[in-house]
Length: 218
Length: 218
Image 1 (cartoon, chains in turn cyan, green):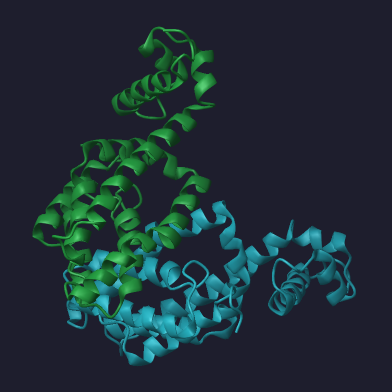
Image 2 (cartoon, rainbow over the protein chains, first blue to last red; image 1 turned 90 degrees about the vertical axis):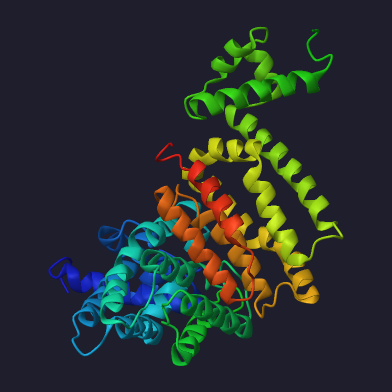
């Protein structure tokens, strides 16, 4: 295929090969040369023409995943057959049952050891992500499914605790300890009138985070 | 006084002057020259002889504060007249009512914008600080004052939420919003059998964190 006749096709091939390699052998152990070898018909230079670094490839995979999950989320937001509580549950269910999402997050886990990347993530979880949960919590307060006096605090806890505290990368835990942690989160959220984590979602979430355990690979 | 005849006296004078200046005009606006001017009888070189940088001075102030609070904490650990729950409350009361501790933490707040310093702090709060709370929680489980099934989770929540989530530096809030946030924390901890935050401690804690608000100085 002529170089750059269809740059988006070439980019997608690079992304697909990189995702496979990251999943097979990890992000840190994968080199641009590995991607060249996997593709067979592209030079290193051709890859650098599309992505300036290995991290740029992973960032793009992450952006694509975020966009896809974002699209799914908007569909949930607009459903008329669910109340506020059910919509939040559906968001967590979608994210927990999505294998591609799980894989890209697992692959990106080592990046969280970089202070700048970690700090950027923490800022996103504290200042932006709560704003995604808040409208659904407010909807639940209006429709009676989320009887909370703490809508903002609940949005902040959902964002912080599910993205940071539940991660074995930061708080190492066995699968049993993770399940116990999710049950603890469920109990705390129940107490402030936000009963998002029912038994089904506790199971799904505990399994999801056990799969994120890059320190004790399952 | 002869240079270095009593280096610890000179160091303490530098630390005292720096603490005063940091509190008066902020860490970022204070220069080594300001410390020279305040002391009157020491050169810049003399200060650099004792501390390699302004941050080294602040680090030492923080270390000294941590040692002092640590000593107070050990005294609380060893008291025979308090149960486990009362000991944890006493630790929070001590830290909330200690003006020097509050001031040094307030002064150090801008450093938390540095990704490396922030990441080091988050790691301390996730991996080491819970180990300080855990023995007191276990003591409370044994003496019946902390009827929790979640001792480890409670230790992690006490460390993470009181040091990170309650800080208006990370989660901007008015004084009223901060009080509501502390009430939310109290409700969540009560639900997992760790009723540390009674009304008195909710008040003290909300006031403490309002004083830490370097974004909306009171």
